[in-house]
Length: 220
Image (cartoon, rainbow, N blue to C red; front, side, top):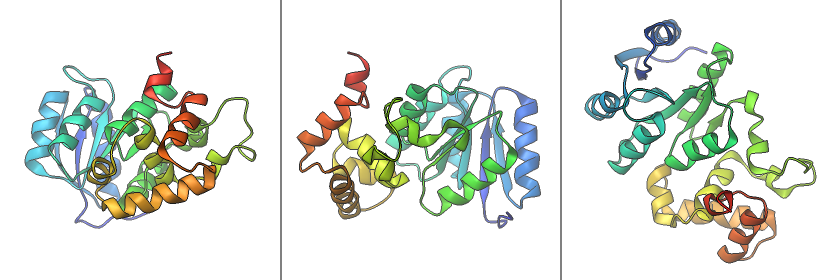
């Protein structure tokens, strides 16, 4: 996949060799590297100042984490697409990143093409989770068959809206995080409720708690 020169990127990782490898991959695909840094606090300042199309963030860095970087940038209404690159396969970590506003969650031990696939998918409005994580399993019980669980029928965007709703975010907040209109959020909500055969928000939260999919249920 070839990206246009208009695609700009900021790289954040505390290992220079990782940054250099990603920079080489992005440059070879036609992207322009605006900046690189090695810690979370510097990342917030750099991304806010340079306003790249994409920022690729390590999860664990000196100072603040990649997830906290995302929270701060989303709070400031930064429009960059924010992607986590990590060695962690923990489902709770992936869900936390998505709830914070990550547009993609990638694994460092995945193939390079996953990064390029993610950039294309996210640019088109999607939320990308590494195929190595079997993304659907983040939202289903381990003992459930994807063919039997209605959650498996949700689209990536419906799944993300579902996650935000059951963790207490309002439609306006979700719209701001996803850079879509509240009306579009309502459309996704109506669609996912229909697929899950749930008729109100209370029922949706109950559905999520029964499957341990909310931050509240995770603490029980």
